[in-house]
Length: 172
Image (cartoon, rainbow, N blue to C red):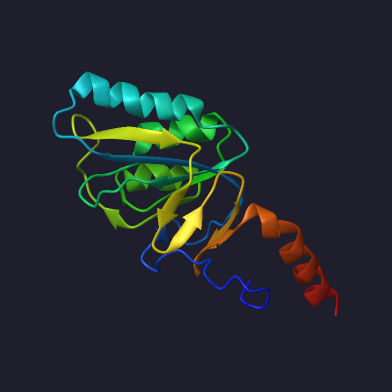
């Protein structure tokens, strides 16, 4: 990526895998949200379940929660997304129910642990719209590659170039 003039493609180093043995690759679908202390429990749950129901299968859900206080993934949500065919989840935020999610063998990359959930505290603001994590701009349709070493975002416009260079590198 650096060689083709796009060095800014790596998410912050503190976004780590829940299970170091799992990798994640695929097209991205984005979402973002924010803390809203005035939201009711019902409205926050409707906002969250609306996101879960709209996340497309065959995509990696990437979330900018604009928050560092609560969990933006837990056991029921992970199970739902995996069942719906979502490839994995990357969040610039928190996670809970980690033992259960590890048993799902579903790739999850996140920043911190906390038992505190979204109910009555957080709402979805956008789905499928551009987001920024760290200093990386991410658009639905970009690709993600993630493993124990970190998370790389490949802009949709560069996917073919990166693939060509990668194949060429492995052939030479």
